[in-house]
Length: 431
Image 1 (cartoon, rainbow, N blue to C red):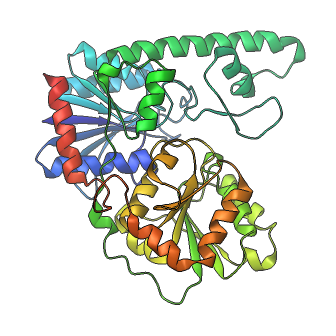
Image 2 (image 1 turned 60 degrees about the vertical axis):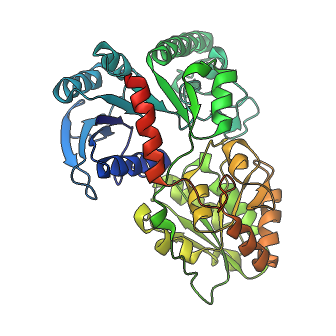
């Protein structure tokens, strides 16, 4: 098959979960003889909007990457110049199927361009972006000034006041007009997204939680909604050799953004007693990373010295760079994640995970079975669960040995079987 993968970022330019997963399946599909192309974005402020550039995947040069420039309009959901570049690529390639991973920072209208050419569209859901304009059901401006307050559901006026107030003029006598404008904008966006959903042939959810939430809260038709967990290159998580003579080490993997809850992890670590340390991996994000270091600097000096800021790593080296140097992975997200890759990866390496009792996090980690759960957003409870592992490292190792709960041997789904499942779904929509 000729497969066109659409994703809002591609490694190493962008290196978060959905991007890493997209690259992994592209590699596996190419290895099986398919012709794979990637339509993705970059943000080069010195080039015009819509400029297109071709590159090759450095690990699989057979995969062609088509990067469209979008440095100035990343908050839009439709962008005609990106539609045009995608249209040109469709006409040139004439793919058998389009597989979307995310349309944020691209354009939702890409779906219509594919369907005008009778190209079937598969869409893997990675978050709530279709039913929440900001994607994570977290509010930027809560009524009680609670930073990153959880949102209980999408409503046009609430979106305007709680998330888009940053675009208001600030003049009190214009407040209601600003609300009315953004309430209308959100309403138009949501109506348009439902038209997009109608055009997609198949939605894939990597957790049962996400599938159910889209069907029950958003009305996604069950007839074109399936559950299929992510697939992984398990070879990246083999031969873990824990570095000797180190204190009990907690590890965090991910981006330095508020939604990931690193600030709560640092606060929780401050309350853990005993010989332990915390390693935080991830790309430096300027002010956000500096702010996190400032939070760490509020801890006692002895605790500050036990927090280590680690560089970004390449996913292909995750065992050597991360798991060999970690006794437990903590996934402290304050948004309700659906199926974090790092949880699966740690389970394959037989490293226990501490995470929140919410969403796909609580689906893939069961308390005192293959890891520990804490009450979502509760720093004290997170600290308590971390303390339990420091006090009993042998128990921590036994939790890690259980691995992935949905297989008999504890192994996570392999990428080879996963792409066969994807091929079957591609053929299903093509037929």
